[in-house]
Image (cartoon, helix red, strand yellow):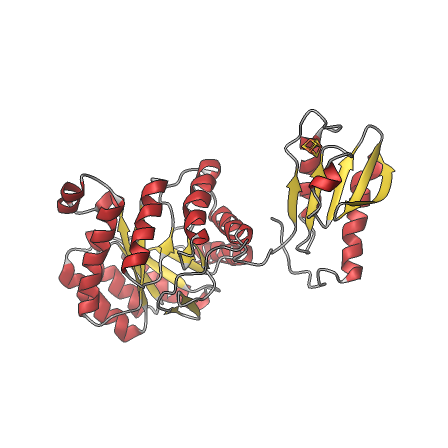
Length: 368
Ligand code: SF4
């Protein structure tokens, strides 16, 4: 089953990318180096690009960071978003440096006239703006009216800022509505998608470390994407930024919004029929698959009786018995090998894919 049809939004150009307008969902992340350290920032951007990131945000907290932007724009393999808080002059500097998109929280840049001026300058430079409403900086008036941080309060705040922006005629806008609470985030984006046609940047803010952050991101972002909402995503993790990109890719892949970029490992949860210590076996197969360039689905199952049938959708599968291991393809056992040769035999099957051309021979995949 495929996700719901994508809700049509306006197309916004960000350098060579298009966000919205039916374009593929764009994966974003953010560097955590000092932006003024140009070499370190570029090195991290290259790693993010290699992992599948398409748009990268850099913090611009001060003049030193702003001064680095022109060189970063020139050398970065990915289009940049300048992240600005409090000091609108830094946003002007970012536009002058050629940054194709600026992210602001309009609640902390010093008033509506400054927002309008920023729109006029962005229009002149052909740049886009992200209007990023954040639960932490909602206007007191809206908090009082809605009884706290609610989806309706986030959306009303965004719509008020959009009125200001639209009054200038500027339309290259992406909107985000960030809260760290997943149901509030989901509800806010659902509501927003019914009220305006600007592309939506999805994310659950301050989601936490890799384990819980992945769950929050997958549930929050995944729910919305499955409903056809969202044009660009950032999984927020307290982890190396490259992990954000891996999780983002996996969310898009499991929803069939991106082709699988490499092998997919499936394994059974084990039960009382299990005839092998499955956890270390799965870990070994996972390691082995890191070198595999093909979008092949590989199953590791816990018993020979039910395993091949339960993993019928797998291209290649293995299961181990007391002495012998089985190799199966799409549910049918094709080889029986001594237990100690099981991984070797799996590698042979994977190598055979290179020759068969079944999954293409591009060799451009990556570990999952
Ligand atoms: S494959 Fe076998 S061991 Fe694994 S869950 Fe199914 S029946 Fe249990």
